Figure (tube, rainbow, N blue to C red):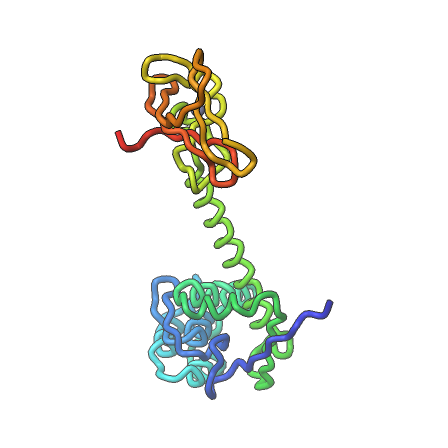
Length: 254
Ligand SMILES: [Zn+2]
């Protein structure tokens, strides 16, 4: 199966929301930047060995208005500033972090990114200004960000489902969740005995294949319609389950 392609151009003219030039403010390493491009270009001058000129230059990039200008400044070789010597080792991971900030700090943009599904995201930038020219690095990193966010969202969902585990209201044992009957008493508790208020054994069944509800008290020959019962001395209510069978829940009306 061929994967559909989702292309965009990483530049400033009418920037696509995926572009590093897209005007979406981000906070990265405690600093606010107007676009990912501003953040990325500034990081070139913010290494552990940065000189005072480098830091000033990074500030200049940060403060510049347009992303295109930030890009130009970041790539400029004029002046006393120097790109950090280890930049090649850090540039990709830095861009990845910056993109992650963008799509976790802007929930609407995140939704848009996730809506691309598993399409191949391709950056068709032909400007050539990037040292990773022609490598689709922005596209690859965007797909990485998309996958990471999807995984995190799935994990959160699973955790939420776990925290919403249903427990038997009497013995607190985890039971198979039945959203319709959140207070249903587990089978083990039912096995300890279901009694009437007077302490007589009581059982319940459907009237027939089509459902219905009947109760039978031990020692009696006729069926009745008694719903109230006691399990481990806790007041419960038995009824016909929606899709057949009987469900006994603790009586929350008490
Ligand atoms: Zn139980």
